[in-house]
Image 1: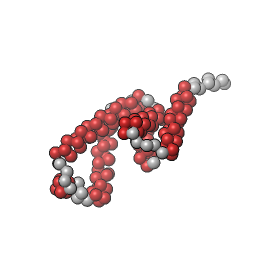
Image 2: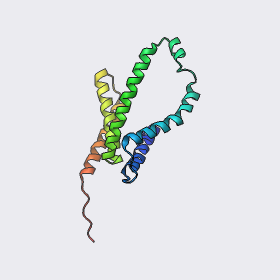
Image 3: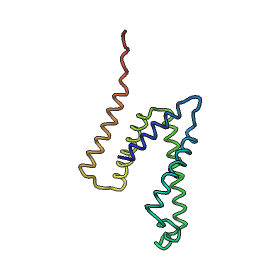
Image 4: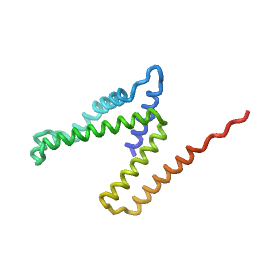
Length: 153
C-alpha cells in the first residue's frame, strides 16, 4: 500500500513539474533527479538495515559467483531504467490517473501471465483480487468515454 501511494504521489508531482511550460524539465532529467534523491535518502537506511551483507567478500563466502551477480545486476538496472523512461514518456502524454490505471493493468497482466507460464495454482482470494482490478480498469475506461454535458447558463 505504501508503495502504491508513494508511486502515485511521485507520478502526480512529476506531472506537475512536466507541464509547466517555462521551467519544464524533460523526463530524463526529472527521473535522474528523483533517482539521485532516492539514493541519498535510502542508502543510509539500507546500510543500517543490511550492514555488510552485500560486500563482495560476504557474497563470495555465501557461494555466489560475483561475475554473475555483477552482470545480472547491470542487466536488471538497465531494464529497470528503460522501464522507468518509458513510464515517464507515457506520463508526459497522459493524466496521472490514466497512468495509474495503466499501471494497474500492467500488474494484472504480469500476474496472469506468470500464473499461466509457471502454472501456479491460484487461490480464490487471489482470483477475486485480480477480478476486482480488472473490473476497476473496465469501469474507469467506461467512465472516461462518457463526455461531460455542456453547461447551460
